[in-house]
Picture 1 (cartoon, one colour):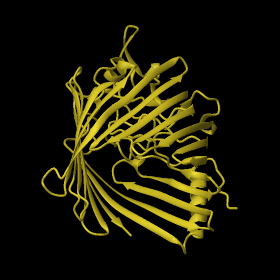
Picture 2 (picture 1 turned 180 degrees about the vertical axis):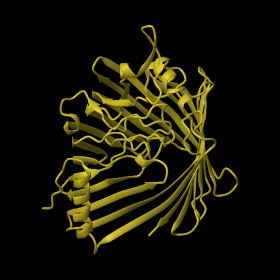
Picture 3 (picture 1 turned 60 degrees about the vertical axis):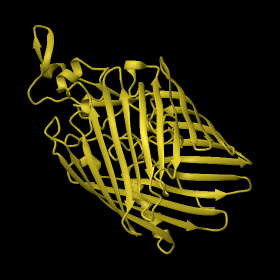
Picture 4 (picture 1 turned 120 degrees about the vertical axis):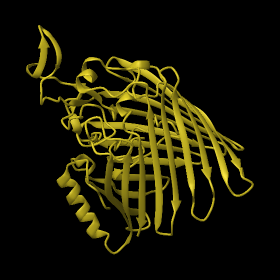
Length: 427
């Protein structure tokens, strides 16, 4: 029986694993995707970053059936970015072995697992680490080493996960965009003395009915979302008397990611009633002395044939709440999402999703527009637009440190409105 060994997640291990499996799969089914991407920002960054960013990426997928019950899947990913050195990276999105038994499935290796139903945020989606330099909305994930045992009986499914090895969140470099006034360091700290070698555990139960899909999940281990802590060198500050008043010339501190140990319980539900789709994600999380609850709840109403043709037009409304209020690490602690989805249902599979998340209390808004259209059987054009509205301008590094603004969490991105075009070629 094949076995993928869960090695410590370092570059040399990734390279060896990819080389070995790619060689084994050369005569079997494979798919390739090449993409060219350009992001045009409305203005140069607050730290002088360029307004145009271009990159190219490749993702392959190999699938090897070993027999009726066993198969291997490998999905490597590579991006080369002309401006942001950290965005040039390599990852194994998946490198896993699947065994299908009598009433169960066993998966071992590196995989991606998605949980969630809402549009605004994916609170319950905690298995994989966010690849933040790929997408700001958290949709892109890093591959996670795991052993996953799944059972399915009628309309119910149970999943159990052992997660050895932790993946740190990716952040932009000094030349990158969509970041805080200070760069996030690569040297992370952990609450657990085991650091990246800590073994996490998770489980999920899911019910799939005709109208209702319900999921209950639990997770215990290293938080996927780090706290960003500033560690200052007192000898490199400027003082008035004994009071620090600024940073010395040439000194720019970094933010250090700190990963806590947490326990999280999650609930996600989706109920279909005719043209109405009701959605809910809710979590309760605690780690150290901190305990909080958060939820994203709302609906999507679809008008079939809204334009007297094959087109479908959807209306979305969600409310996002985080009990931490100003202490929340997300800007969505008491916000409304309003969205509109258009599907032309044409041969080119044209789709468009527009949304705005509104914080009426602090007068901040996040405007998003996503669209895609097939140009041919092998070419797909994607569009992504983000605009960040805040009454406050981005802070300078010292103001960011000495006068943290927990009320206006989009101000660091106020100069980062952008339009991104991606052309994908499928082989």
